[in-house]
Length: 133
Image (cartoon, rainbow, N blue to C red; front, side, top):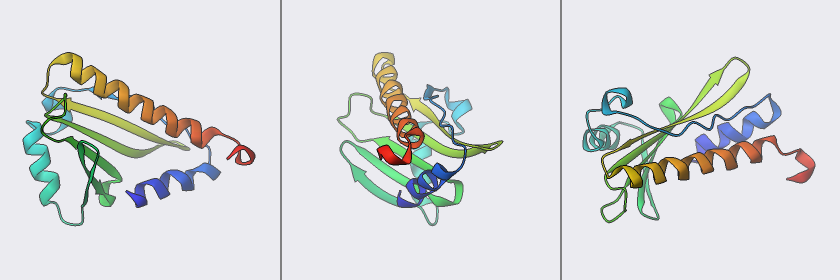
């Protein structure tokens, strides 16, 4: 997670835009058939770092500049996976968030909004002038 944060912070000196696009996706669009399959795949991938934060298990995949978050049992949106990827589009560094949620739709929508707010906070921190930091 430190590496991904470092990449985002390193982009401050460049023209930076952060996408606020947390979207609930269908399993086919997400790249995994289910949250359980995604969790197993990420958990067994070599070089991925795992941590628990609040009611989430979080994985940092430095090889793909991705941060994966999975709800723990007991979370209102369990089972849910959120993939946040850093991508370069032209001269901009973008953060794309995708949500695969198998919980009831209202809980899924809440997770998407929460991650969109996180993306917005990152964007605001990156666009603040250096003097205001």
